[in-house]
Length: 177
Image (cartoon, rainbow, N blue to C red; front, side, top):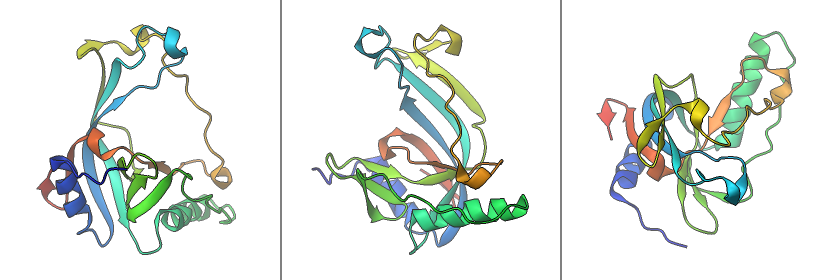
């Protein structure tokens, strides 16, 4: 396991540690698209999604992410007039908390940032070998997944954990990283 912190990662870690409670932010990411079809797919490992201007909420709490997520879902259920009885299942078993909201893969040391997405990116595009490609031209593009239960919540709380090295830019608390 490596604990190496890359330049951009160090800057992100530093500014996230300044968050007390909740802070709104915006970020740009470049993530590999997980395609269907396995090794037979000629585009496997070559397609990336560039998302710009993703509105996110950074939660930094001593309670940890599961409790913050649970509270967010239950507040939403209350607003919708439903019983607020949602219970989170906690972190995936391959993750461990470094300093919440920073998580780390237990085996390979890869760091992640747990966030709540508050809307769609301002701009989304796809790249094949670094060149633009239309979404409909991507072989094996994943189908939309069914929503999670979240106690019947209609306006779902979207918790995401992007790898720190997939975050191209983070705009938070007046800083641009």
